[in-house]
Length: 227
Length: 227
Image (cartoon, rainbow over all chains, first blue to last red; front, side, top):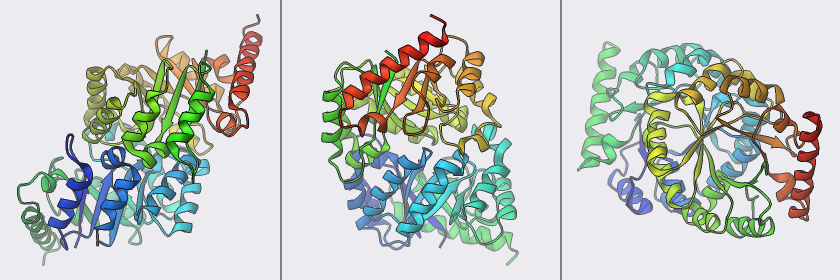
């Protein structure tokens, strides 16, 4: 099971209800759910708690893409941990001293898995992140993060990340579906999880689409491993 | 008036009440207020709306340090604009295509001022951001952002930013007080605003401390301009 579903409620819906409906609909299918700022901004930590309480997945991820000073990230991480989140995503590029070092301490203290973004899935990410990619991976390794975000839309970047980091870091790859990556491509390149949002959440039958997607992942992985 | 007050409620308080008390206490003193994720995560957009409704400052800033794909940042920006915010802060390093280009369109459409972070105030910021500083400033200029965040803790960085960008971009400088910069140093280096958080919000008498700080800013600026 390598599927994480991203739940970002669109405008004009009750964000909590929208998430809970999808979680119930997808019961038992994905390995984890990821909620981002669109839910948290709409509903606050209270809404996040309601949503997290119905997830029985291994990973309950708050993808706030934290990129602030340590003091601010610590306040936020305590709040989302209290709401039932077990994994938090932050940006590697902010560096360690006064930022990720403090966040790492708080995560260790609270038993939260820390995942760092070292590259993103949109075209513009290449412009700056490519230049400092090895620095960003170096930061992931240095603070011994649980995992790293690398784009499914750029399998070569996933490959390079796996080569640099070795087997002991989890790689989470967003960008499958609406952003253009095919199911299984990132897994073949070395990712542990593929993150899928709109392709599933906007489908008429989300669980059918999710199950088909997992099948495609498995076929693709069998093919690339020559099984 | 060059003071922006950062309102980040600490743990264990009612975030909305805490912010409103400070806003009332500081009435007429700062040019703007900046609220960050600690408030929004706690209270959601509903709490943000309550807080923004009592601000009568020129700048009402949501400092969520957006650093996501365009789709996600657009959802968030619409939500905070609806809550009464007129200025949004995002990170320059995420690049334009699929990210800041979309955010710029949404901000223009909604009449929101966009401010981009091109350097941060904590020590670890130097590690990665220094290497790509001119790229980040290039992005600020290219998308014609209203303003840029540069650290008061590093006046040379503020100077370099002003030199690169010229006079038509606003420079907002955080890091005065708790993070170590002295009032007025960033203004002397070319900033338009200094952002102060804990030094004022944790004071026994916040408005007294804020007024003293403004006096120090003015003295420092008079001295550095040889007046």
